[in-house]
Image (cartoon, rainbow, N blue to C red):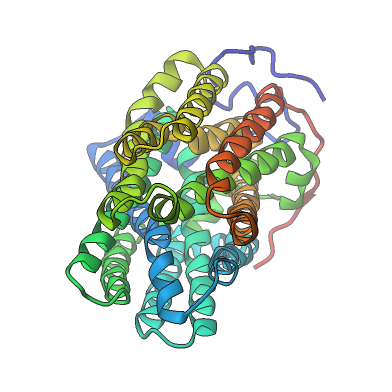
Length: 444
């Protein structure tokens, strides 16, 4: 193993793959060629349509995931659940996500990106219709697991796709910014729905309609990206051979990125999942203000992901991410000190803003440290580990809250953010590794 000769400590990880010193030569993906060397305006238009469709898809995922925190107190009341029991929701979705991560690469080889664009939204539609029927709580948990399947397919696939492009921080920022826009709208719309004295499950009828629109957009956008197109792009990079995707486990970058996402996604999910309950029960906020605290967090994250991606490109992903983490820790400390609900909403908005680039930056670093043919498998794997963190840490907070009270939330997120920064130091200092990778013939 040897480091990339130009990978300095603070240099942006946005260079192309041409300098990779691997036994398998990586060349830009088809979409990178469209960006770097456009051959026609038609190609550029098709790529823009695909990016826009992926952005809409991410906004749908944001609506799903951010609204859980606002729905949580309503589910507790409707099903007469304790904090510990309602926390099972945080476990159900990631189980589906992890299963999807194991299937993503196979779906790409058999159906291409088009398969992801169709199967992912179908899972979301099934999940929302089932939850909207408000059956017994056990079936609701199953529905959240199905939603995790759809989320896992769409999230991991589009993350890897954007992360492999030129100006990846910017492209990833657009996707994750769209996620955060959906995330900002979710708690606010749920609050408006409940304020009008309508049942909580009507929200999932709206999400079902949103998912249907996503299916109608993604299908045409990726209509040409079938299995043969995906295989051609793979074969052009590896001379008609297929790299054994288990090779991702030979890279330290894969494991450190997985641990980073385990810590960071758990922190992000814990904040969005419990802040509404915290504001209602500890800060004595009104339901409207409590909902604003969650919406403000996601609004800030949307703006941060859309704007700070450019800052990250200028400063370098390593240096910029450390700066954002330090600012987040300072804001969380202020959140614990000041008890005013209005100040809390402001601080949550600022916290979301500085945390915006932290997830896409991890994807960008990983895709710059691995060969292009391993991106889908690697990003799906590390994102699934992130979902494990997104399940375990909020569930653990729920268990602690059950015994010690809701006040521990503010200290738990501060501790988790510090842990995420510590892991980032180890992950971001890695250099490009050279490995002799196992080659196998593709099988249908």
